[in-house]
Image (cartoon, rainbow, N blue to C red; front, top):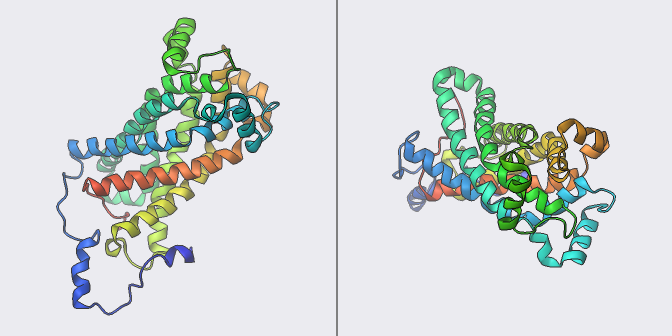
Length: 330
């Protein structure tokens, strides 16, 4: 925490005349916003930020996600993270590490639009129903219910591409198509539209707790960092300093996200690989220990992913000049 604080300039300095001019670089500066907070344009631009945030980051970590999925569903063959990478490259070459990038990019871009866009909508909507004082006093509950509501719809958007991705990544070599344009028609021909949504319930079980933790933990961690670590209020920090706080809070939130959602993530991977299996079948086959397979690489992946997502999302808000209310206070 001390190292984080050291990134910020000492606020207890005499203010020189020239320094006053630099205040225009701070978030506290009175710059024009591109839209009004809570307007339709505001929510639409937040959705753009969510699309970039989730689409870019999930696609970038496709190799790690690929190995993680294989560790979850075939622990006899893939012993650990390093072994998983080694076997994948040996069997499919380096390009094999990017297997499933197309459904990952499309699916998580759609999910990001709904996740971040609807979160802003629901947070504002529920906060209005609660009233200003209650919205502050029970803000953790507000973050949890708003994020859960947003993720409900986000997973409906994600599920078809997630089904294609996991099947492509975990099927035996030569037993299933390795391109999205061939994988999607094959799933539809064999199982109909239900094949794309058969793992939606465990997907909700994975993603809703993950997203609740992601948003609530992030929001409260940002509050804690500004209150206890950062040596000056947010409105006196430059935008780059604020983004440092965003990244740190995002990584902390990501570690907790990975832990609470991991068993459901393992079940999703297993069900998409094993045709016709249900949640109970997956849990029975995996066992308690198997439900936690691949947790190490997932913590690395989700911690980094969540930190980068918040960094990109907040960065987009800065670049698009969106209103960014400070941490909650009374």
